[in-house]
Image (cartoon, rainbow, N blue to C red):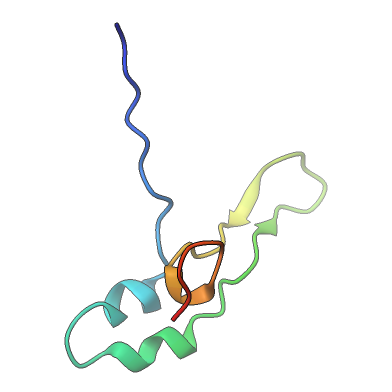
Length: 62
């Protein structure tokens, strides 16, 4: 049987750094709250939204 590994989508640079001690206030500086599509393309993203729980995308919000 083949099992697939599902990775969590990546967090932004700000939210990744905010997980370290002393940088918690950087969550407020993250502006990746929406996907940014490539103009005139289908399903191609320039920038993926941040899936850090501090943004409240369904899991627990900060």
